[in-house]
Length: 368
Image 1 (tube, rainbow, N blue to C red):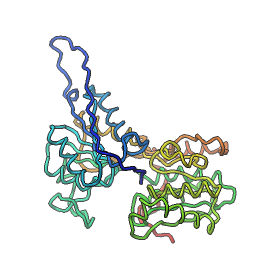
Image 2 (image 1 turned 135 degrees about the vertical axis):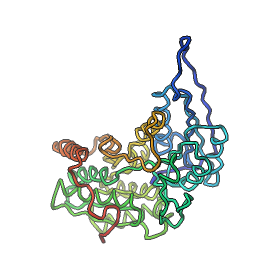
Image 3 (image 1 turned 120 degrees about the vertical axis):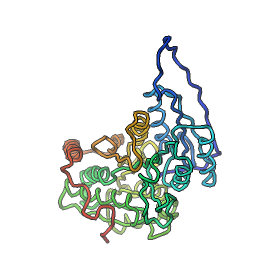
Image 4 (image 1 turned 90 degrees about the vertical axis):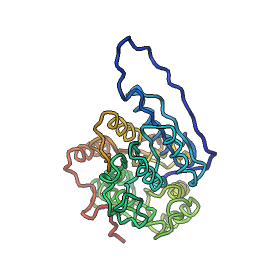
């Protein structure tokens, strides 16, 4: 669920300047930790998943006194495996891969190289009983056991969606707000939407939340077609009469932001601060439901260096400041004075584990 622009493959090697050590000092093992990052296609400075994942790796290296990480930006999907292997061949200790698209190749590399740590950002590793990628998504193998040095970073999207719902309900003048997801069988998408509904209702019990999906199975239309996203969203806005729109659909969702701006209503971004990553729609973006990518990647690498990391899922949520809302930067919208207090109260409840931000069938869409 992110914006990507094609760019040539790029590898940047950055030199490390070491401070002089006193005679006899024993360097920390983490000081020599070699960290490589394979982004998705696009650019390293995309103000999105690529940039913030790399910044997380850089932050960890600085904390550990390790060499500055190197990165590679694949020219296309066919380069994923090759670029991961490039870091393997150079004996890197930790290899970070960015996004769902690299999941399969990361699993394969983790199985083939059991002595290297792999971090798959925004991926829940799904494997068969042999530890191979499971294209049928039955996930019958225990990835944590079969691939003990593969960590999938996951976020609690419903919590971020809940916070976005509070804001949406607070700025709505009509009492009717909307949300559009990519496909209704994607658990991450559904969690965002389910949280949004509950958050909106917590602020205004009488709020009406209209929901739609861009596709029932065509992933390109769902996540990679901003023209379709704008057309579909414009019809949705007109037919449903919503005055705030939340989108969870990558590039297709960018089209929804455009449609919201054209319709003169407010919009809420997703995953990263879209006021920064998609400035085309700044005039109507109020905030974004965020995954704190820098912190998640940094914390995971530090845990590897500290010997506390375990294979499987590393979960980031409100309790470890792994989710949140982006800052209110749009001066055109008036945020009610009670909203910050409501957001603070909700975050406190999430951290304490006392606030319900997702229904019983969390991640499974049961609505219309």
